[in-house]
Length: 80
Image 1 (cartoon, one colour):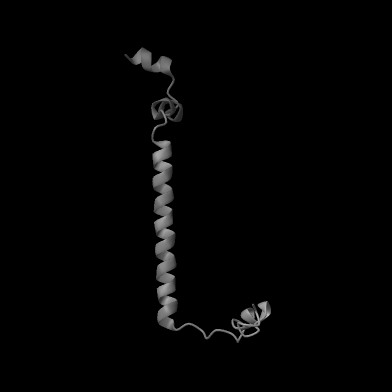
Image 2 (cartoon, helix red, strand yellow; image 1 turned 45 degrees about the vertical axis):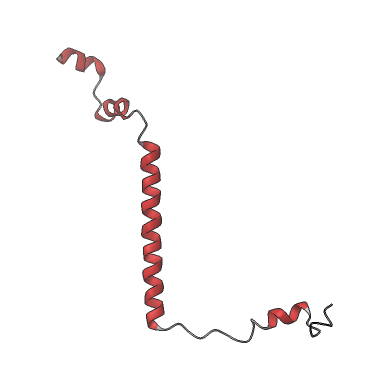
């Protein structure tokens, strides 16, 4: 079967990609790369913040506020 296709071996396929180093990218493409990666980082950050917000929102925050403010429940009862 390989003889019918021209006698190519498996190693010959990889030699097609090893012709030499790729030329350096131009300044416009480097700028576009930086813009794309910045947008990607911003987008992924916003997605992670939204996911954290949706996961943390259902927690009963009212129990934590008293603990954060160091306000004991007995002192609140005395004020009323």
